[in-house]
Image (tube, rainbow, N blue to C red; front, side):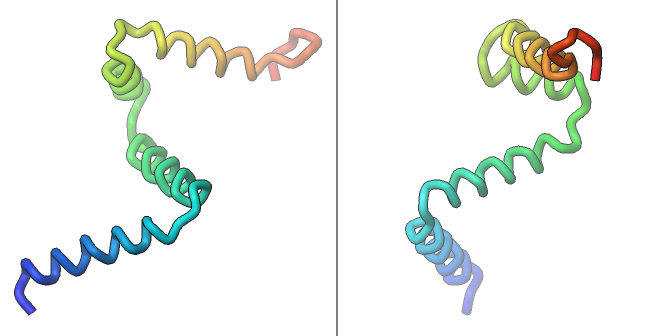
Length: 80
C-alpha cells in the first residue's frame, strides 16, 4: 500500500469513528484534546491564547481569572 492510500484509510476511519459517536463522547474528546494542548502553556501563553480566541485585549482572560479567584473564597469570606 502506498502512503496516499494509507492516508485515505486513516481519514475514512476517522470519519467512521466520529460518525458513530454520541455528542457527549465527541464533546469529551474535544475537551480532552484542547486541555491537553493547553496543559504545557504558562500564564502568558494562556493569556495570549484566550485574548486571541476572543479577539479582545485581555478582557475575557481577566473575567476568567476573576471567576477562578472567586472559587477560592468560601462562603464565610476566607480563602480556601
